[in-house]
Image (cartoon, rainbow, N blue to C red; front, top):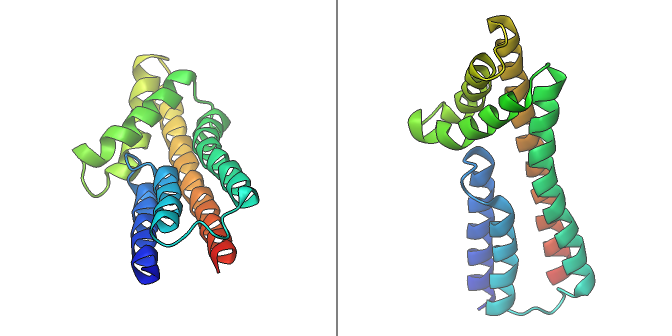
Length: 160
C-alpha cells in the first residue's frame, strides 16, 4: 500500500506543478491533496500537528505569492488597478485562447488592453504595465515552485 500511496501523492504533486504554468489548476490544493491521500492510503503517522501548521503556513504563502507578485509587477511599472485586473483576467483566459503561448501573452495583453481602455494610458505606458505583469507572473511561478518544493521536502522528512 505504501507504493500506491507514494504513486498517488507524486501524481498529485506533478499536477500541482502543472498548475504553475496553467493557473486554472489550484496547485496548493493538489499539494495538500497529495498529503491527505498518502495519509489515507498509507498512514498519517509522522504528519503531526507541527507538520500541518508548517504546511498551512506554506499554503498561505503560496496564495500570497501569487497575488503579491502580480500586484508588485504591475505597480512597479506604473500600472493601475485596471492593469492588475486585466493581467489577472488575461492569465486565466490566455491559455484557453492561445494554447501554447497564452500563459505568457494573456497577462501581458490583458494588462495592456485594460490600461488602454480603462485607464486611458498612452500606448508606451500600457506596454510598460504589460511588461510588469509578465515579470510579476514569472516571479510568481518561480516563487511558488520553490515553496512547493520546500513543502514536498518537509513532507518527505516527516513521513520517513
